Length: 134
Length: 391
Image (tube, rainbow over all chains, first blue to last red; front, top):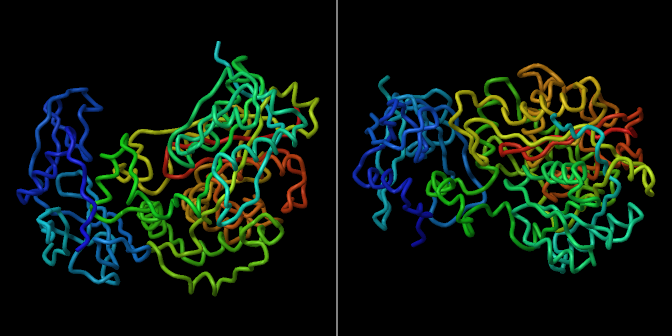
C-alpha cells in the first residue's frame, strides 16, 4: 500500500514529529522571551536566543482557512482531502488535515480539536476533527 | 550616495521560442534559441553577451548557454531563487550590472520543458530540493503537494472576507483568454472560454478550478538588457526600466506564508509596489497597462489592491468593471499571460510588457501606453518593475 510522504527528521524539526509520535501537538517556545513559534526555527527572531523548549498544545483551535483538494490525486492520500489552517488556543497557527468531515460541512471559524492519526505503516501525525462543544 | 536604477538600463531585445506541450528538444536548446532570438531582435551578435542571469530552478547552466550561443567572456552571472518570484528579479540583477559597469550586455533567460518534462503541477512529490526540504515537510505529509493547494488556502480566506465569487475569478480567466484569442503564440489562441465552461470545469483545490491555473508549457524566453543610452542606438525602440525591485517581507515563506496575522493581502507585493513607485517617481495613476504575475486568477485580484489600483477588498469591483480588458482602465496580460499564453515562469509577461511599450502587442490597447507595470511570482519572495517610453 502506498504511504504518505514522510518528513525528513532533521536537527530543527525532528522533535516535533517525535512529539506527534507520542500523541502530542508540540509548539516551540523561546526560553529567552517565552514567545511561542511555529513552524520551528533554531533562533528566536525577536530576542535571538538559541535556547528553546517545547510545550504541548491543548489541541483546540478554530479554522482560520481551508481548501478541499480533489485533483491531482497522489498515492498515500485520501480524496477529497480537506486541508486546514488552525488558530490554536495558544496563539500559534498550524497547517493540518480535517478528518471525519464532508467537504460541504467545513467552514471558517469552526472549532476543532486535534487527534493523532496512525497510518498502516505506523507513522503518526496530528490531524483535527470538528469540535461540537465550544 | 544611494544609486537609483531609474532610467539606467533598458530592455533592447526579447526572444521567444515556439510554445508547445512537447518541444522535443532539450531545455538548453530552448534557452539557446530564445537568447539568439533576443539578440536578433536587438540587432546585436550573441558574441557581445557578457552577462547572464536565470532562475535557480532553471536546469541550464550559464556557461552551457554561453558556449551554445557563442557568448563573449562573462563578467557577470547570477541566479534568483523562488520560482516565478525570480522573474523581475533577473532584470533587477541585469540592470544593476549594467548600471555599475559589471557588464554591458546581459541576457536574462528561462527555458523549460514545463509540460513534457518536470511539471510544476506535479508539485514537490518527487524531487524536493534539499535546501528547503524542512520547509515543505510541514505540508507534504498532509498532501499539500502542488502550488494550487498552497495558493488556494490564501485565496479562500481572501474571497470569503471580501465577497469575491468564482464568477469574479472566471472574469479574470476569460479576460486573459480573450487577449490570447488575438495572439497566435498563445495556448488559448482559437479556444474561446465562456463563463459556463469556467464554472463547469473540474475543481482542483477549492475554490480554484482548472481554468484558474496557468498553462504548463514547453518554451523559452530571453530578455536582453543594456544601458538605456546604448539601447537608443539599437534596432528596437527601448523599454526603459523606470524602476525595478525585489521584495520579501517578515514571515515570508515560499508559497506558504500562512503564519502572518493577516492572510488577506500580499505584504511582499505591497513592498514591491512602494519601492518601484518610489524609484520611478510614479504612482498607480501613471500606469497604463500591466502584466501582473498570474499563475492563478486569484493572484490578479489581490495584486490590484497591492499596487494601489483600488482600495482594500475592491479588486473584484475593478474586475467586474472590465478594467483588465483591452479597452479597460488597466489592460492586463494582453498576450494571455501565464494562464492563456503559456507558463514560461513570468519571463513571457516581461516580454509582453516590452511589446506594450513598443506598441506592437497583438493585444495593444487603443490608447497611449506610457508606463507598464510587471510583477513577479505571487506568494513567494517577489519583485516588480515599471517600464517606460524613452528617456
